[in-house]
Length: 182
Picture: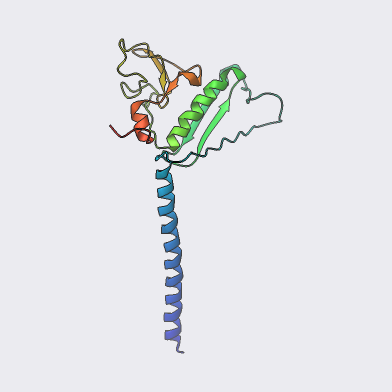
């Protein structure tokens, strides 16, 4: 076998290996895309894992206490239609329901729901209203899960006090596949 033939054979083997790897990557991507879309078909139950991590020693408290009274916060992040949402909290036990509200909001992001508030974190009207057809419009009795707050008057909002004050609005329901798109 000549050196030129050997290099040609080696080239073909490398290309063959790379094409095989590419085939499996594309196969994985198609499977992943289909499985993400299948989550919104609601033909089977949706498995959700909630993992609680604590900083510091373990004690009897259910949540991580704030370092100071001014520093209580709950923040969440997740990729729209992604697989993972993260909620970070530093709070006292009176804010446990708010932790559930933020967790539900981030779960909806993983199912394809988009935010219903603007860059100043104000509810988008009417898309972010739980009851956009309510008469009188204000105060809203509930908060739309993707809007974060309950609108009580024009320019005035309040954080939901419990998960019982949340509803899934029509646009969010369509985005996550509960109802047909309007």
